[in-house]
Length: 303
Image: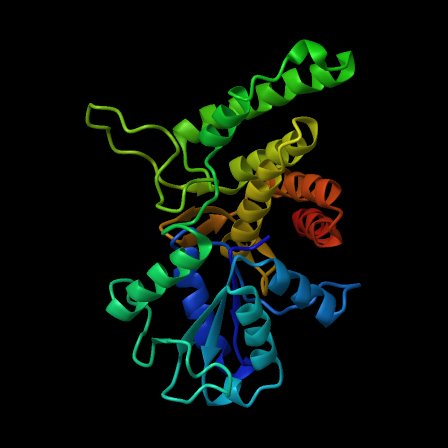
């Protein structure tokens, strides 16, 4: 499930991409790439993400107003009460949407401090129920499970062994996260740990593809074993963001790390392997063949 579904006309793709990246920079998972995976229909793929999105941002322009699909997507969002419209141009929205206040992004060119963009962030946060993205951190997710009071002795022996192995994996990922960046963080860009009284030293903020692959795999598996669906949602959001930020589709190359929103460095074999394994675990956990396809592409690219 994505946080934000971005509805726009194909002619506005460049500006929509700029907006999508800016929203992703604030920790939200944004669906805006309309490339249809093999074996799926347009309506099924787009419709599923539209129905499940926590917020739908509709970009009005002279092209989208005349579009067949954008008004339909806006109507779906309005019926679900998750509509947040924006104006790319000084246009009048279609009938039925003119009474809905829209954020004016006529002159916005990517400035995070622009008042209109800041208002848009507040509007989206209001629809989503808070002012920032809701993806739990690894530490928060682990703590939440530990406080459930589940009696490990009640588990079947095989399942108990898997649980011990799973927590060992998650523990290793948490330790790695203390050394270098991990993508499963709160939307404010900080880690999930409680701020101590003493001043913290500088921290390495790089996001490493391989470590996130391990985290995605661990939480996808944990979701089924521990019966915690929020773990699976966290894994899906992290995988979606990593796919958009770290994978160079035209060149079929994976980047090793992300720093301040920019992907850099050629991926190592461990990046391809761990991320592909994480995608494969997501495919098994969700039944979504898109992740299976992406896992296979990682393997092909590595070879």
